[in-house]
Length: 286
Length: 285
Image 1 (cartoon, one colour):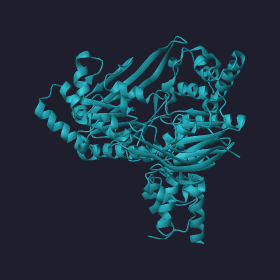
Image 2 (cartoon, chains in turn green, blue; image 1 turned 60 degrees about the horizontal axis):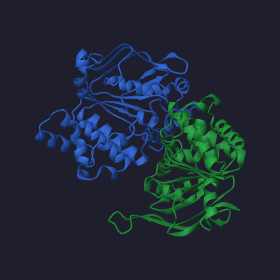
Image 3 (tube, one colour; image 1 turned 30 degrees about the horizontal axis):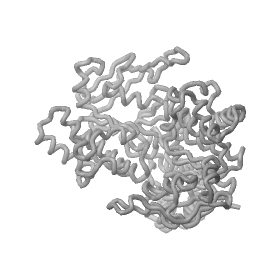
Image 4 (cartoon, helix red, strand yellow; image 1 turned 30 degrees about the vertical axis):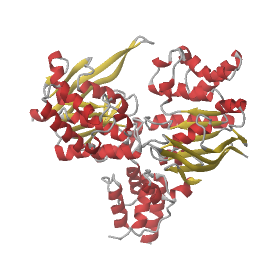
């Protein structure tokens, strides 16, 4: 059964003012246990509004969010438990660090869950290990850490709640390729340890292709596409039309196809593009 | 010619003390580099490589621990030079929200020249011109906090232009932007360089942004690992891997095809060039 399901979600901002916008318009999808889903869309497409709805920070104007088959708004106690079971990590989470020490910052979530000292300690140690934050740093102030370490600390704070659904909004923003690979490694190891569903919001089709089983494309508050990575990339032209960057290799193949080369459009890495072009050229020159 | 050298790093090191280990750490070590007038230099390096330190040294926000930095021949470590150096060298940083000071777009752009004591009429002229240069003139009366990230960053660039510097250092100006914002900002910067002859030092870790530069400098471990044309720098795959950087994706496809025996020239870094090369190999043009 799906761990998260949304049914016809709609939401708008600034009603009755000239700045009125429909942020979400009739959005329905499901996410299975253990699945990794990437949510893609340009700025203002409704991704962040959608994420904030999944753990009850925003209430939909119509429609519902279901966790494990139950409406997250069905009763107060359940709504509260959803905050821990659906862990939301915002963009640039390092700006939200606030405690005296990294340990206390990571422990903040588990503490609010009402866990005992011993269990909190276990959670913090486990989360720090998953994100690769050395034990020695836990007693330091989070503000003394490097940028990369700060982000790890902030992500650990969400992981320490052991959410069944882990949502990360642009977790690799501002990072170089090495930093990005590190973050993706962490997400995978958390998922392997817990079978959690992971929802990752990104601008990058490359990142989505690398990490996700399935991609949801948002455009102007609507769910424009919902499919596997290869299903989504078959719509290269439509994706470009709504302002998304498709991988350079996918674009290359699409342009060669337009120029009359018989190539499979199912390409989104440099390796696959080279394979496809090689096969094509060998066919041509035989 | 001496007069063409806009920025000169002469055996520059920059150190700080690590409180934990009480050791002196080199953010930059013995770096020598010259940026000439009118150049478009891209500086690439992973996080922590020392590339931002380079930016801050270039307009005397940081002063070198060893060696000298000269801007138009002016030593950055001489206090009296600070003001003329900051008029010569503008810096645009990563986070657009940290660089906007006023609530209305044109007021924000006017902030710099006002502080330079430029007469009001001249300020008006410069503000209009700068906003037109970044395609934000139609937004001149808009509130800054309602702009998108890419628009804010363009306003920050206009604020710099209104001060009429000779060179702008961009310190990862696109890192916090979405693909559309990134394209807009890149387009403006390239235009400033090509059409107005603005000297540009562009610091980034997006390899794709480097392929159109005149020159690419790779910074790693506080030193310069490579300095040359994009074609020559991106050909050295071992060096890039050592520096934790990837080859631009199109260059990677071209390399793979080349290593499988296809005649794809090493100068192919852009999509258009690779499409042409493949079509030629397929006998289509």
